[in-house]
Amino acid sequence: QVQLVESGGGLVQPGGSLRLSCAASGSISSSDDMGWYRQAPGRQRELVATITSDGIANYGDSVKGRSTIARANAKNTVHLQMNDLKPGDTAVYYCNLAQIQLHPWARINYWGQGTQVTVSS
Image 1 (cartoon, one colour):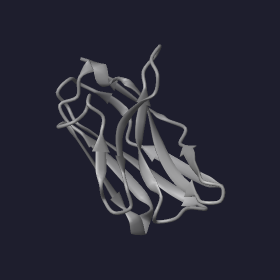
Image 2 (image 1 turned 90 degrees about the vertical axis):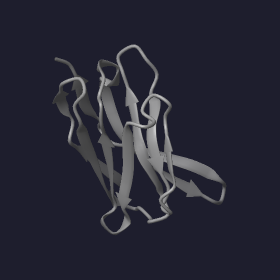
Image 3 (image 1 turned 60 degrees about the horizontal axis):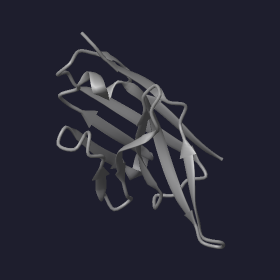
Image 4 (image 1 turned 120 degrees about the horizontal axis):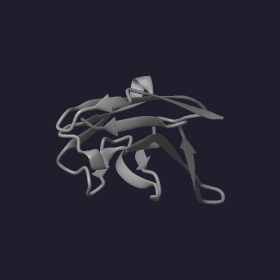
C-alpha cells in the first residue's frame, strides 16, 4: 500500500505563485519516481512535472520555465513551485508515485486524492 497526501492547493490570482507538496508513505522506495499531473474539466490528465530519485526533472510544455519540481528523498516528499500562474493552470493537481516491478516488468502508478488549484482574479 502506498499513500500520497497532497497539500498547498487553493485560489491564486493570475501572475501569482503556488507551492504544492506531496508526502508519500507505505511500501515506497527511494528509487521511485514522483511527480505531478493535472486534470481540468473536460480535459485529459496531463503531465505537469516528474522527478527521478537522482533528481532528473521532466516538465510538461505548458508549465516549462514557470515551474520547479524538487524532492527530499529522506522525507519521501516532492514539491512543485509554480510561478506566473495563468487561468489555464486551473485544474485538479494529482501527486503521482511510480514504481517499477521487475518480474514481470510493470510500471505501477499510485495517485493522491488531488488538490484543486484555481487561478482567477
